[in-house]
Length: 348
Image 1 (cartoon, rainbow, N blue to C red):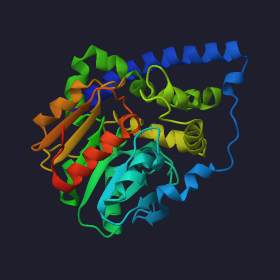
Image 2 (image 1 turned 45 degrees about the vertical axis):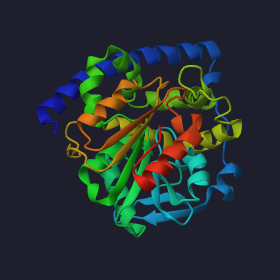
Image 3 (image 1 turned 90 degrees about the vertical axis):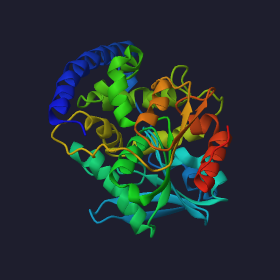
């Protein structure tokens, strides 16, 4: 477990880095505002949910109310063993559309909107998005759904929650599948030693600031959504992985009240030393890591270091996939998840 001294040291280091990247971002915002004569801040109204989100192809929509009063939304399809899916930033249950359709022939697939996302509740306040609270949400959801153990597959920020859950509540996990998210200890140890990774993590520090990240997220009618998923630097490798209609679904969800702030609040909890942390323990749950090597936010070497902290881990690299690995190579990702969740083994 990280000591309080280490947490305070990380907090103090994060402050100047946040101010540095925030200053550069602010200059960019001012430049865009002047150049566009204010047009950069105009957004398209999206009062109506896109029809694509209610397509029965994806499954049926449900809500679970937890003991804390937080209501989580999820989409469910299939009748087999339970497979819970956790999305990353800035996605929601729709991140798993390819898995809902394909894997439901084998599993009961449950794609969750984590708190703050999609149709799940969005409580106010940074503290409501700390790791311990979100992990507790998923653990209780498993029990509310009537299960003792599930297989959990998670991507990006969902992976962070899944890693923490595997360390704090391994008794609810049959198997664990992580997509493009480093083990938290690996990221903490390797990130500062790797200048390339530190540079790639610039946005994490900028996200610590109030207001500015939300302003940037909504500029040019949420242009950052397109840049993240389809842009030349960060976007998918596979052309057409996200259609214009898909992007409209993401824009609709993030345009809802408090949605962008709630999503960014996950990051704002990373460096606060007085927020309770999830215990850091060795993971004995059988684990599969699927990693798109063309990830522009995370170094691919981070995947292989997990073996130091996980007793039984298998790593599969996909050389031609980006950070959005389940969208770039849905067939191979589905095959890996199906094999691992049913047999504990994965083909090459």
